[in-house]
Amino acid sequence: MDKLRITGGRPLEGEIRVSGAKNAALPIMCAALLTSKPLVLTNVPALRDVSTMTRLLSEMGVQAERSAGRLVLHAASVKEPTASYDLVKTMRASVLVLGPLLARCGRAKVSLPGGCAIGARPVDQHVKGLEAMGATIAIEHGYMHASVRSSDGGLRGARIVMDLVTVTGTENLMMAAALAEGETLIENAAREPEVLDLARCLGAMGAKIEGAGSDVIRITGTAALGGAQHQVMPDRIETGTYLAAAAATGGRIRLTGAMASSLDATLDKLREAGARIAVEGTSITLEMTERPAAVSVRTAPFPGFATDMQAQFMALATVARGTAVITETIFENRFMHALEMQRLGADIRLEGNTAVVNGVERLQGARVMATDLRASAGLVIAGLVAEGETVVDRIYHLDRGYETLEKKLSALGARVERVS
Ligand code: UD1
Image 1 (cartoon, helix red, strand yellow):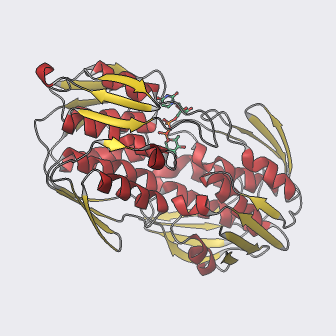
Image 2 (cartoon, protein in one colour; image 1 turned 90 degrees about the horizontal axis):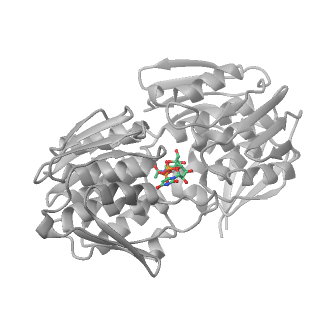
Image 3 (tube, helix red, strand yellow; image 1 turned 45 degrees about the vertical axis):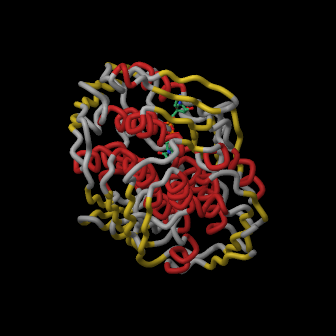
């Protein structure tokens, strides 16, 4: 199993390019199931989750051709509308095929994702919305068996009020509604920029969608969607991760190909920590000349502070001046990294969904274990500031969501190396 060996204590300096967003690419790839014509995607990041999604779609008969950041998906026909446990258990986002399959084929068999390292993560809202659109969904032997009777004329538009804000839930329903008969209204919809990016792609395919990016989305179904070309938006979490790493190490970096408007909450918090940030078009420059000040964060749905940035800000807080209170409101078990950071000498007290972090002068390198994707990113940042050598074990989590992480970090002057 690969590990990342980091020799810390050096400020990040230099320039790198941000990759396409994992969380936009995955739902957009599933949109290919909605049309018999090719969907041409660019700025698709080379990540394990993207390969897993490609494999999942291929198993259904979707042709996939990839060269560099370009991915062409062609679902001329869908041979088997099934997502097996083997793939779903490795990537929860696989559940995003449910809505498109049901809309295109009238039936789908998708494994329930089960638990994951950061909490229960149920899919009841996806199910509730699709049932409101006329689907019948039975749970048997760990699978959701979804169908819609063709005598009923397929999926029908509906007014759906989500009980809570769910990103993939909103995306699943938006895709299903694009091919449903009549109008669908999704209220309390997720406002994440990735939802908007998916809506843009669906729009290019001929879907009629209004309000994406707000909490009420109106979709007028059409009988068929066509092919399209779409450029995946930049990854705001990758952007935020490198910025937090530069801030924690007292460095100066420039990120190109970024979308600053998608990470306002992160930029505000980095400024509060003392970073100087300049945005010019698609480039973001961050400079940190002093020890960071402690900043407290509370995770919330967009435009609030992203839960996917929480671990990286905890790493920043471990070496900050003062005490930061970090409150996690989205996932119930997302503090696994705190215990690993303690192994590096961090002073963190956990109280339910709150972590109280007293900044220390310095961390010391040690062996730590990555537990999930963003926890790993937090540990890498902690390793970059720690004195001596830190070895992060189980970095396959990082490969799910960070394109060429060690290359990018090396380009910024970090001493990192992948070891088997
Ligand atoms: C997406 C992101 C993930 C991010 C998360 C929150 C993708 C591929 N993944 O995950 O990186 O951390 O948003 O911003 O885009 N919930 C229910 N019932 C449901 C659905 C969700 O109770 O049917 C709960 C979840 O357990 C969680 C909260 O709602 O507590 C938000 O989850 P959700 O937005 O659905 O996360 P994902 O879409 O899985």
